Length: 218
Ligand code: TYD
Image (cartoon, rainbow, N blue to C red; front, side, top):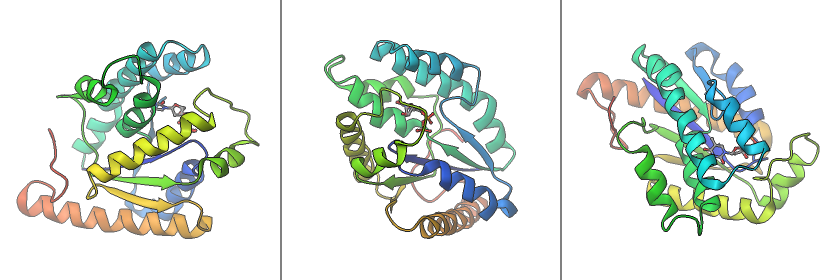
């Protein structure tokens, strides 16, 4: 019944963080999941990314993947009282597609929020890994993938968008300096998730709803 999301630009260290959290939080038996790609729709998203579909098609496919993700993974796990940790979630759309839809629709963030309105499940807490774009791209340099999202100018805008989202909801976001020693980052995030779980669970038991932030339809 606790939904934690992990966000950050490409190369910010989410993959190694998740790898570490699997061990550090094993006793909490979390459901680890991800966007895109936790459902069959994810395959279409990967195809759209590879074929450089137009930004509207791409955004709607990411949103479709999110809908299928909620129905098949997120909601069932939350209904069972599980801790869910998602590698990317709605904020990825709000950060990346706000950049790619710039000049395509009049107000990309409002458009994206309207697309999600009424059916998405807002995260309880979000970890945002922050790293200068040049460093993030250096980290990515060794990897095989080279998606069109991994361009410095786009990632600068994406990171700025993430920071804006965090500023709008400071109580939901934990900002983490991903340039710190890796182990430190992993332990810090694991400790924060433990604390949130205790806080959110006891508050829900007592009042039937979480303390912060205001929640949607759980
Ligand atoms: P992913 O495979 O998770 O990449 P990474 O392992 O680097 O996080 O995601 C592929 C790309 O899709 C990544 O560059 C971020 C982007 N993305 C969006 O643009 N919008 C979204 O809603 C999501 C979930 C991902």
